[in-house]
Image 1 (tube, rainbow, N blue to C red):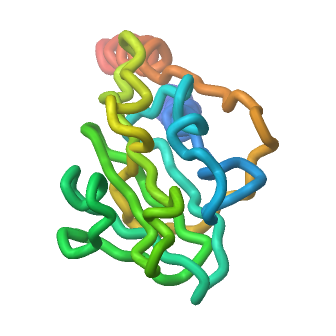
Image 2: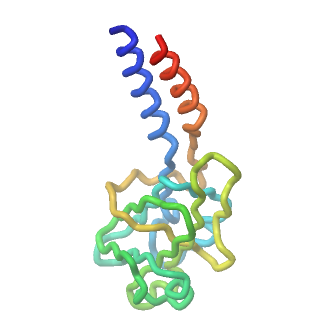
Length: 178
């Protein structure tokens, strides 16, 4: 019975570490998702990984967030949108690859409301490039509950779950053998 309790406690601890490895970014920091900020500059220097979240902070009816392909991003066209989120604030969970986001309201994308992000696998290996050669990179929108805005220029904390998972696996094997 004691080994089952230890196993349960270990699984809870490993789950907490794995959940803590994702980072939530508020697009544009305190400025939010609006005309004016340079989202390419905002994304530069950030390393986005699979499972991280982008929160687009905007008022419903004032803007939207559409994930588009590269040509939609370059031409500010929402016709290739795979997902448009109309209600703000909007949070998207990132998957590996390059993602492009624009606001489809007339003139907004041309006014700078576009973001491109390159997302790494999140394996804790070498950092992925934060932006493609074209300014701004968006992420895959999958609406979730909005996160609290992060302070301007704050570097988010990132925890790597791989070492904890390796230790947990070793302990589980030892518990199974006894």
